[in-house]
Each structure stands twice: as structure tokens, then as C-alpha cells.
Amino acid sequence: MPENKVNGVALVMAATLVWLNSPAANAAPWPLAQTDIRQTPHAAKQDSGLTAAEVRQEQRRQADLVEAVLDEIEDFTPDHRAFIADNDQAQADAMEALEVFRERMAAAITADLVAMAADTTNSYAARTATAANRHAAYTERTISSVDLDRFRNSGGRDDLAIAQYFLMAYRAEQMRQLARLYPQSEPVAQARQVADRLMAELGSLESVIEGREAAQAARIAEMRLYPAVRSDPATEQNFAAAFAASIWTQGEFAGSEIVRVNLISPGWTVRRNPITGVILSRDQRADLGVRRRDGRCFSYVVEFEQSYQGGGYGGTRMASGRDLEMLCENITP
Image 1 (cartoon, rainbow, N blue to C red):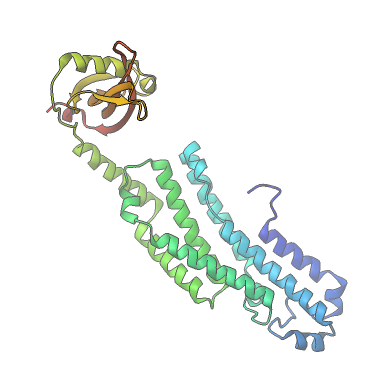
Image 2 (image 1 turned 120 degrees about the horizontal axis):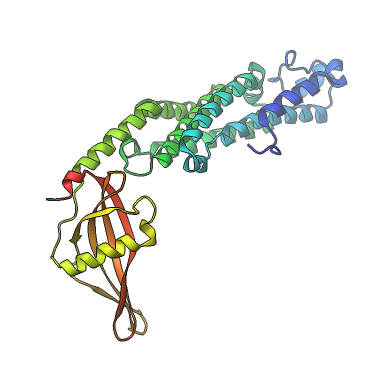
């Protein structure tokens, strides 16, 4: 959280200390431990000697304390960019942030604050309660649409999947803390119930990682190259050379052995300018069985392209591609 952002819990503690040490607190029975915040503004004025304006000012102060904690609950969310930058470090940081958040909420959500939040005679607090219910309802709708099986078994990037796990975990924690602040709220209770159920189904972070690893191993074992629709040794050699020379394969795939090239297009597809009809290029696809220097093997589906140069076509280049890991023994039929 940026240093210049107002800290909700700090605001609660600071504001309470300022009030308790103020002359007004010593002069009138308004400190949190002594105040019956459920009294009506009229009764508060009569019992405490405060004017109607002073009663409203106190109600506004109490609502601000509740709102500060609500804001911090709503803002509690992981930064998915951190998982892309360093997945392992982001996991450790996210777990630590979760524990710190729980400790902060344990200190901030006191019986007095809960009473302030539940004060139906305080219109300011009532508006904050409405906002809390809206947030709970929104969270319930959002998490109810999550496909947990796809989450656990998706072949997508692990760093983004782990980021999504913590997003779900943080939302569940939001609902737990919101239920502490608003224990009588039905929308909050329902959202918490849904969040807790989904987290129970999802399981621990370790079980999610293990499940994804098992699913990935199964996908690798099942992976096969697309079958060739024709054979053309010259074109296959041309595509292998274009793959090896491409800027897209100079990282992890640099120096790879191209074990097999399956042509999966019946021939070249000519691309024309949609307005003039002038020939621009031609392309076709192939599935390459590739063994990298680290010994791992991949199916690399590539679209190869040749630009039109007036009297004919230029050299072959790799226009796009997608790689999926497979067992080396499955490259050859």
C-alpha cells in the first residue's frame, strides 16, 4: 500500500485516542466505553447536554471510523503483477499480508466499533452499512461464477493461477472480516457462507499446486502432434530452417533439435488486400516436434509466411506459433 494512502486502521485508532484525550471527552459522557450509541439524537442531546449539531457531529465521527475499516476491507486485494514478476516471492508476500491483515482487523473491529456500525439511528452509519451490503452482494456474484475445476486443472500459466488463488482467498477473508463488523447482516452472512464453501472446495495452496502439476503431467502424456495431411520434404526442410532462424525461438528453444515436421495445411493460402485485391502474402501451418537442449520435447504449431514481392514470394518466416510440452517418445508415430 502506498505510504501516502490514509491507513484505515490507523485512522480508527488515532481518531479514538484524540477523542478520548480531548476536553470534550472529559467534559461529557461520550468516550467509547461510556457511550450508548444506540440512543436517539434527541436523547443524546438531553442526556449529555450536547446540541443537535454536536450529536450529528459525533454520529458523523463514529460513522467515519466504521467507514475507514470498511474501506480497508474492500481494498484488501493481491497485486497479480507481483506473481508475474516473481511467483515464489509473491506467494510468500501474499501469505504474510494475509496474516498482517487479520491482525489489523482483530485490533480494529472492537465491540464498540460493531455497535457503531449497527446504530440504525445514525444515518451516516446506515449509509456505510448499505455500502457494506452492496460489496458483499457483488463479491458473492463474482466468486459464485468461478469454475474451480478449470482453476485447478487449467493448462494456463501457473503464476496467474496462483494469483487467482490468492484473489479468491483474499475475497474470502474480506467476507470473514465484514461478517465480524456486521454480524447481523444477511447479505454479508450469505456472501461469507459462499466464500467459505468455495475455499473449502478449492483447498489449500499446496493442494492446488499439486493438482495443477498432476493435471499438467497428464496433459503432457496425452499430447500428440497434429497428423500430417501431406508430405513435402523440401517444404519441411524450409520450415525447419525458418523455425531455427526465427527471433521467436532464440530463447529457450535456441539450438533445439527439430525431430519432425508435420504439414497440417493442404497448401499455401494466399492473402490479398481486402480493398484492392493485391496479393500481400501466403501462409500455411505445420506442427513441429522439437527437442530442446534441456531434453524436454514440445509440439510447436507454427504459421509460416512468405511476403509477395511482385514477381514472386520472398523467404519463409515464422509469423506466429504456440508450443505445448509432450513426451519425446510421442513425437514419432
